[in-house]
Image (cartoon, rainbow, N blue to C red; front, side):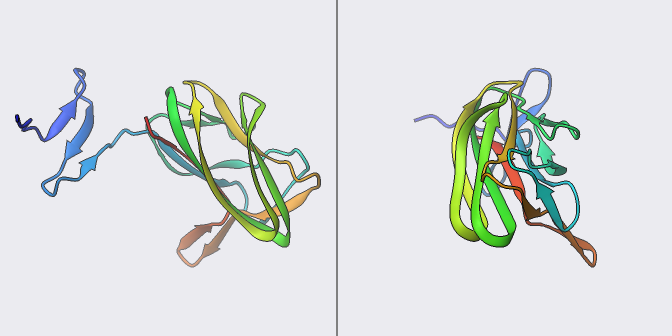
Length: 165
């Protein structure tokens, strides 16, 4: 058996792709990941078939871009992504969120008669794909965006994408 004794794995241009710390943890400082909250404060109305305004970037590494007008997120590289969505509704009722890739409906996140939805799934995406979420519950509704409390902001309705490989 052989041992590979390195601390960092780098690209030829000098970018560190992976670091193994002294405890054996593998760190990936440029692994694509984004966490977006909804633009606005308090409850934000989202019309039937309206786009959730996920344009407040809370975390971003690895090359995602967000269009603040269309609320679409551009994916940096081809691969499998973990999608996580959290929604807080103003009232207890059905929540139905569609996940769209290049304006095509690909995934559905649904919960019946509830104020909250927490869901995840995986999907194959290609570099430069544009993704967004729409309210597909058949009526307009209000979802809680951000709340400022003292020095902290709490994001209640969020969307995250993490590159898995």
